[in-house]
Image (cartoon, rainbow over all chains, first blue to last red; front, side, top):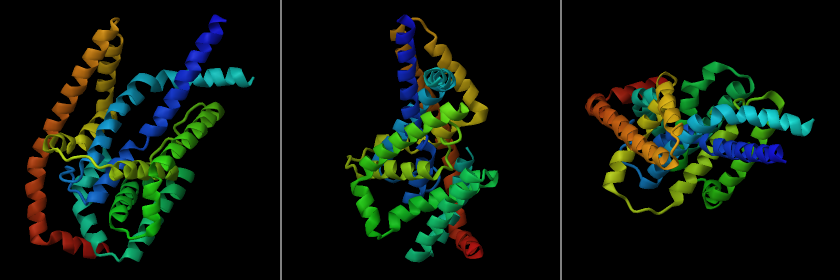
Length: 86
Length: 224
């Protein structure tokens, strides 16, 4: 029972990881799109604040995406899904 | 990181070149570039397309979104949030299936995946629709976000950030962890912003001088 609860916890975290990854992965392309949109000089001068809010959001998320979750949870998820399918 | 450098080096030329295109040429060029990246880099794994050509494609997409009069784009803007959420869910399911099959998600979560590019467009349009009051202070700080992002994502510097963040999250007290992380976040952000401001002090006079000489126009004519 305890193992099942732990497994459930890991799989939920893994799903959160995947969803977070799906959100964050487009962060870098968004930067370049913003630049093209505003015809921006490379320092991203000018432009509109909402796009910068997005940039800030991506920056915050990218910390969690890269440093907190990525390494361990993918491996755990892989093992778990293997167990579930088999 | 390379995209940041390309922006420094080529954005002015790109602007001049794209400005001289007709609406139809711009549409065709953008579609061809995105398809080229999708087919060559994502499907065929030709690495040449991962860097400069990807940059050209994304920059063109941004320029196209700003200048297009296509009615379909307006419709997409109306549904951008729903489309973004749908894309996130689709990529999530695809990611789970891919991890199960080959043990890593990296094959689909890459910048050259056309769906990721599409998702980036939807996310951009979501924020573009918002009506937020302008703030000089936030604009000033946020103007250097790209630099901050690229510096913290750069393979050469990332390891230092990783070790610091990991050591922060290894602190026993949850309260102290959060406080330390927030402090680190602001210090890192402001330090990298300061670097960008210094670089821009050097860059902006240079690019203004080049623009005044008409060199950009000559280069854009050369490329076309």
